[in-house]
Length: 235
Length: 235
DNA sequence: ATAATAGTGTCTTTTAGACAATATCAC
DNA sequence: GTGATATTGTCTAAAAGACACTATTAT
Image (cartoon, rainbow over all chains, first blue to last red):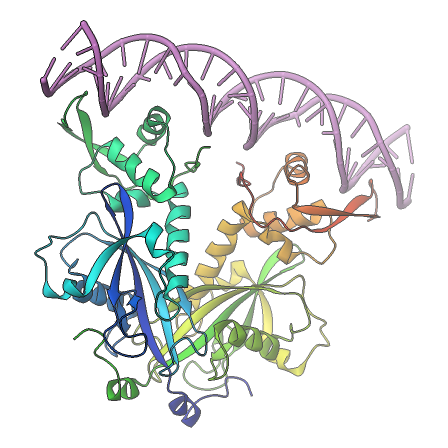
């Protein structure tokens, strides 16, 4: 009885594995998620997360990276990709038994509007609006899990830099936190905490002047990935 | 091209989904993991994590719960089960394309030695020893991920109570932390921190006397699941 | 009494959070 | 100069960690 389901049983199972991506980016100081629109049944016309089936010659991470490039035109950008969790309700797909591995992808800005034609299927939706949209399959749950993950992980990791361009200011980084957490942070305490964490930011030596005000130092992300102690979401 | 792999492509993929469990329990103040021994090829005779294929009429959590009951004889106990992550390297199983969803299970003690016959396949191994054992498939990676998860999650959650019996003392709970983190904690600071977190522990009103010393208050787990601020692994 | 464990109090150092003050720009 | 943003400093309240002390048992 132990590990009994092999040989013919395995063939008759007819299981399928897909990846679905929660792709996030900051646009106009608001967190956005990339949604596609289903073109066929089931759920024709309904928005869904980009994704697709895992092919026989690729692992899960590779499938996620391929779908990201194919469906979003984000291939050339430095995108952080990490696995979320898997979804396997029996009836989550009316076509049959399809498991989905959810992925979280954080893009450092949006690609050129003149990007690949594949991106025409997709659009960026503010996450506040997407929460109330009905999504195909169980994608609303996957999206919620992705948002939970990124909100929690900002506290104890350097993940926020993945939503910034290669070189950024402390104010930009703070903007990421404010957008993801949906609340303002004290610029002075934030600056002191971030700048006082060795290894988190690397000073490029250059500055950026943006309208009025003292020019801001330009940093790029350092090697540090774990923030300890964590950066608390202050009151 | 979008979502193109459907209909016949899907049938020809021949993918299979399994669950594999990292089952942990505290035995003699040491953290142990439950291992089975493979009885057939591949990896015949090599230790592996308990697990098996997901059936067509059950979701992932149900498959994990069923395997837990079937293979470990822990069915009747109150076991905490949560999903870890999924594993999908192309060649992770030489028999074909098998994806695995890893699960973490925390048992409040070990079942009766006189438990079900299924448990005869399995044995409890101290995690320190299991780390150097060669395990079948990629189960060493799954085990490492499970240990990472439980070590990290003790800091910011009430998960440690899942490794305690229904009623326990503060010293027992501290023993869980010390076993999982592999370092001693200050009993006085631990007690003050734990007892000072509202909702974490519920006083049963009874005490337990164990050899010499003042009797310890018996608690059961409260509703609180998230510890904030987290319990830091002190120096 | 002595040893052992449970639980409380106290002190010091560190940190978070509020916010004043200074630096450097555009105008 | 004014106004704006960046960056540093200062103060206070809270928390962490070290550890003395009290409480309650077995022997």
